[in-house]
Length: 214
Image (cartoon, one colour):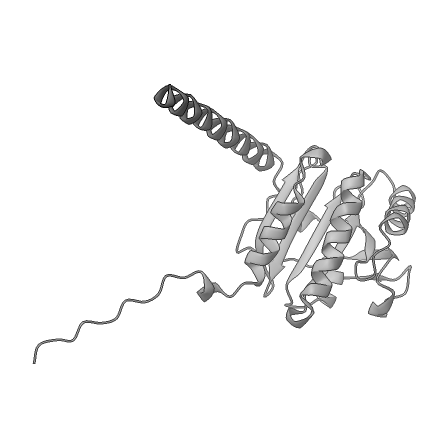
C-alpha cells in the first residue's frame, strides 16, 4: 500500500508540474504576441509627454510637456504604457512607488504613460489613476502620440499594458500583456531586480589557473 501511495503521489506531482509548466509557456507565448518592437540592447529612445499628476517632488509642474525619459538620463527606469484603467494598474503604480523608494541609492525612476482615443480622455484617466493610486514618486503622463504611443517604441496596438525597463540608455527588458488580468506584479519585480543587480553577482566564479610546470 505504501508503494502504491508513493506512486500515486509522484504521479500527481508530475501532473501538477506539467500543468504549471504548460501555463507558464502559455503566458510567455501570449506576452510574445503583444511585445513591442523594442528588444534588449536597443536604444531607449526619447519621447515627449505631458505631465498630468503625481511626483510632486520632481519639480515638474502639471501641464508641462517634456521628455521624462530624457530627464531620467542614464538611470535605471521603468516606463509603463497603459491603455487600461484596470485596478492592476493601480497595484503596479504602488509597487513601482515602493521600488523607487527602496532603490533610492541606485536612483531608480519610473513613470506611467496613459494612452487613449484623445488627449482629453487620456489626461482625465491619468489623473483618476493617480488619485486612486495615491503614490508619491510616480508621475502619470500622456504621450504626445496619445493613441499609439511613441513611434520609436513600436508598441503593439493589441497590448493593454506594456512595460519597458531601461538602464544606461538601453532597453534591458520588455513585458506586455493583452489582458490586464494577465499582468504579474511578481514578474515586474523580478525584472527590476535583475536590472539593478550587478552583472557579476550572477556570473560563475572564474576558475583558478593551474600552475604550469617549470
